Length: 364
Image 1 (spheres, one colour):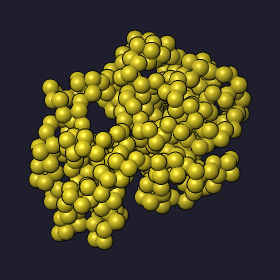
Image 2 (cartoon, rainbow, N blue to C red):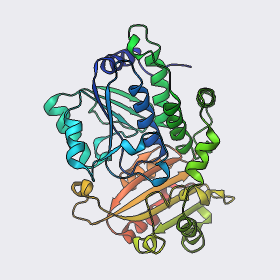
Image 3 (cartoon, one colour):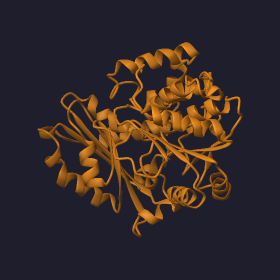
């Protein structure tokens, strides 16, 4: 398998990993499968090293309940719920590893603490990410937007670190818990390998993970077949009542207010995958889903006084990018066919922004 990173960065990061005793792993707000998979996959590999480092994962806020089955997910610290413990953990770290986000603002108030710790204690940090335009804050940066997931990058790095002859302390094979978490991240960030997944090496990695013992059918069942009755009714409502189709531009649009979410007892993760569904319609190449949310305490410094945040998710097919639209209109970004953003303001205003601008970006 080809190395996609500089050998000097591999060696520099290996030196940090081999000499660190207190490692903290951070990932983005509202962690999805790739955030969970990349952070927990790395966590389990580090915990298995003969140097026995103390490893903690800190996330800005809660992750969906259908990831509770992932090995050691219960040990993750939630910054918004246990701020004191999470802060102490980060301040006492001798290495910080950031996965699946490209700039500190993607982790809210935790990002401000991260920059403060780096600035005051000079704690070294490693960034592992697959989004465009990484910010300049980490000592070693592994940025590879061509990768479908951060979890795949974690796999590649572990393989490369463990093969370095000068660092015998890192010569540790992937454990089953680590492999399972990495597979989960790869599977979820490609929609069960239905987009951003036309890469042969990805399936070589999947084959290796299965050889280690990953039960991919079990993982699929835990993630995609563990939703609530309320979630199923919500999906039906969105597709029947809320979906708008713009045939001329091959596009679909769904919006969801907090009042509507409350009606269906909405929980974190209940809208997962909804943005992909309209693209099952023949002739639909673009899909946008926006939903209303409240501004978390960790995000108040970004909200400019607004109490409402709009989450934007977009998908597309083939050579039809949506990351430019998300970047220009909603200060977001991502991959060509899978992107998102955030808007601090009303659902009506966010909807109007979409309606006013999509004809300029979507191909007829």
